[in-house]
Image (cartoon, rainbow, N blue to C red):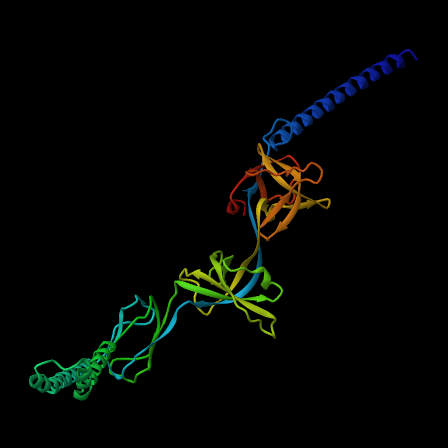
Length: 380
């Protein structure tokens, strides 16, 4: 009995010592785990002193200006000057001085006819004129010699007709004109679309020899629905785009609103004048945006800047590198720009000219999120 009690005390002491060692080891592992977790959070850019991540966004400036409301339609491109090259006299083609696709200037020679027949006709007309002049003198000189005075103007005019002098003068003028017309000239600046004759062709007066088109001065014949016609005004702005020139537009002006309305399509026509850009060509179809109404002095932001949160429209304004959302009251829009109206309570427009509003990258942003402005292509 006396031997068992010291042995039990020894076993209890040994067990307590082992438990203390296990607790110390467990406490050390927990401290290590906590330190590792803190370091990982710091490396990942969290709130434990790491760098803040700024989201890339595309911005544009708010501004004051005119909001142009427009009508979108389509139309066909025409040239202001399209002309058939014709000869006014008959003859044989001796030279073709141009080719399709060549740009020519007004008055430039395009086709020449054989000049020899015209030179002969001219020489013959000159001889006939001299004969008529001699006959004219033979008529009035005897009267003058007999009376000693010149005949009256009435008698002289009669002698001009009787001698054939008047007809001879007309024939000479006609021969000169025919010789001039043996060379066909460009009637206006343009580009040769086609040439339909070759050297040696025998052509008749009025025959077509080619086709000339002015590519610099164009017009678009735009269809406008009858209920939109009263909104279009002559002199209004027009923006022309086409599948042939993606990403490009041409500015023009409404030159005329034609009076007739097609009874089938219920549409009228507006003529838009524009300058060519070597891509837009006659015969193409183009999209046209016509100015219908101009609202002056409006606070404007890009239409893409306005989004909704909880059913309320807002824009994000970048201030000190952070996206501040601002509730707004949108007004009229033309699809590109939208006007911002004054607040109904304070009467103050919450967006100022020059404010940088976000137009891309703002759909999932939160208020006061850190952002950085980049170009659109960088964000993509």
